[in-house]
Length: 196
Image 1 (cartoon, rainbow, N blue to C red):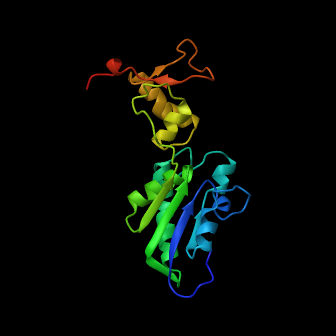
Image 2 (cartoon, one colour):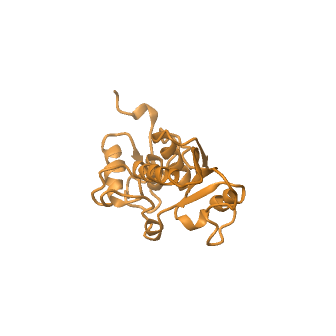
Image 3 (cartoon, rainbow, N blue to C red):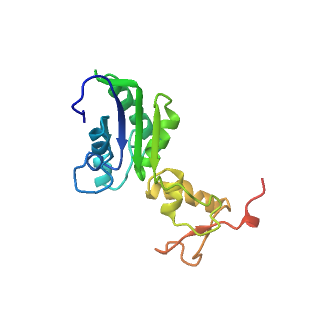
């Protein structure tokens, strides 16, 4: 979105599950960051992954989900860095004033992008959902653990991360008699952690 003003302008890349929400398309109130920033004089570029939102994998996998060779949040950061480079080439963008903002999943995306690509002038992460008791003293679901790790909720990631932590003695089942129970959660007991 390009505001109707003359001269160089600051720009913001907005990231979310899919690009329409931040652009104000789809009727989700209070998440239309790109539209609101454009109304205030910023050039905005809204990014999202419509296909992965539709199939509920919620990320970019390179080369594909089964053979991912790059962490999904790193792939998203790479996509945002490419968006920065494209936006910097727009005639009326002040390339010294390009930022990134994201909410929820987009908050994680904006955080990784701004930390891994130092050309962003600023960033704002809105409720990225990463506050976590890292020792799992309070039981956590597999989805919570995988979200914290920055990977998608996918069966391959369950075996790659959670099963290995259980096998290594770092995590325990809340329902050990039925390990596939739908209410299964995982926890640690600090004095039962393996010795280093």
